[in-house]
Length: 131
Length: 406
Image 1 (cartoon, rainbow over the protein chains, first blue to last red):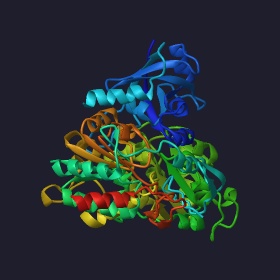
Image 2: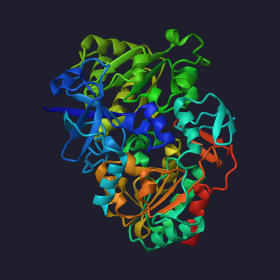
Image 3: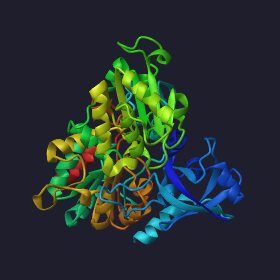
Image 4: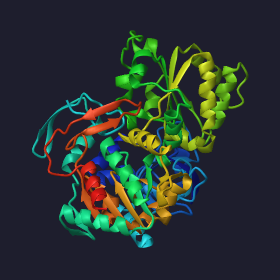
């Protein structure tokens, strides 16, 4: 099962507060490594609030937890807090303005039995491929 | 009273009592600001070279060595440094022939340039409090990004010409893809699809011209036109949501603002995130004619997208990053590029960038451990003093030493 979504990133004050305390904390990971999905998309995937999903595109992939949207219906539209997790999916080959598409990330979402991606793993990906 | 450097509101009314290792009493800090002050006690770093702890002097000497030998050095960050440090940083860039860029390059830069060059009318937040009867938060969610903007200036307070309650005297409109926390508080919320802002602007211009709008709910758009027409003093607060949606169509916002100003008074105040991004943009503009994305290579001053952090990260052979964590905040490909060069990180606290850096130089936190000045999001200069004693060098002192040794 898979749904295709457009991911829009946003700011969250609780995640920001957690980041100020420590980027390496469990609080920061929980508040960052999640994707808010429309209930219709969740039903299509057969996932419930709190379950893990793989979010991937041709840029990268992360395993994050699902958060059920409380907003009006928005199938095909998903939200992630701006963080190193969402940035795994953001293209860097950008247009003339050189502004990345943080707010219109095309990605596929599917259920995952894996645990949520740790920040240490994200860091290792940068170091391994940057070296 | 302390000044909070947690966001570009630079709130000056912070009262707090600090005890060893903790804040014991506090007044007027928002949640974001509280986190910022708590950061004084967490994830502090020590000087390092290649992961080994060294003295500050050794770390600075190594940084000088790296920068002196670089053919294409990049200096990046700046939005979380005081004006005094930014001034030294720009001079360092000239001395090195470096590329210099700040966080505005991938957020509010194109909008800030229009404001700083007088192409968009703007005002102070005090003007907003005293005169504004309509505030439009467009692709912006101040309840999460600038938590006291509504209570100090834009919605709830009484001002010299706004003496009645906010329900009677102020309109607060939100245009956003997402029904944000601010959208839930405000009197009118308009949902746009991702990238639909240009069409929304076209519809607003249509209704202001008395035409039937092509996009959106026609009745709601006509109601919006009525609110805007009746406005005495309006302010648009564009967030990164609008900037990202418009990008090279940012002229559309200029067209809309010009149209609104044919009818009434409308100003624009960009929702700058970091506390002194505007300060850096102003300093660099005064110095080089551009607000960001500048190269001083070979003694020539050039400006363009090729000097943006996104492009420069791929071609630089050394980078000095100050007060910023691009490995967290930029796309994976750019972060990966930066992680692969000789990286110098000047920062008060641990981050992915300091973890990846060859040289780490700890700095004092501005507003808490170091004094200085900054430009608030609306252009007002704010001075701040340290509230705790610290032996740590400020960004200004570190950069001055690097510049002197080079």
